[in-house]
Image (cartoon, rainbow, N blue to C red):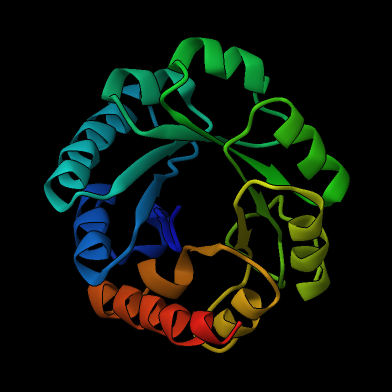
Amino acid sequence: MFELCIITDRALSNGLSEAEVAKLAYSGGADIVQLRMKGFDGKEILEQARMIKALSEEYAKFFIVNDRVDIAVLSDADGVHLGQSDIQIEDARELLGDDKLIGISVHNAREAEDAESRGADYVSVGSIFRTSTKQDAQHGRGLDAVFTVKEAVGIPVMAIGGINRGNIQDVICAGADGVAVASAVVSQKDVSAAAHELRDMILKVRPNI
């Protein structure tokens, strides 16, 4: 499916817009960019979404929107990523259609199994390690969380939370199909190089699994 997802975060991007970060991330090898703009006006979110959609087509990559199904529909994004407290998967599917991706954030195998049974295309488990990127993120759950969720479902499993160049290979070896990161790429001086390094590290360890 995809191995490296970059999540935008204006507070970490050193003055770069979400679209600017996306362009650099795609050029560095990111498979997918997830637009996350908590607290911004819908007009500005949609503006960034439409620009990232154009970039995703230019680079032949994926683009999804965090939480906002309406923005995903209006920008023709490839899908949406939902949290446990967002709208139901079935409602999102009705709005998006069958050809779009729906990802769900989960904390354990039970939530992952529920997401799969209701039609999620992938789950994102976390936080794997302690992180300050999301204020509502729970404490680091460790690599066992990746393993147990992967064992429980048949859809792709992404790992998120505190993942960086120092632990990304451990996460892949624990069973994650891919990883989602924010600060490990978005806050770096060279966003493109940071994305390239992480993707290279994933590819180096994957054949050994």
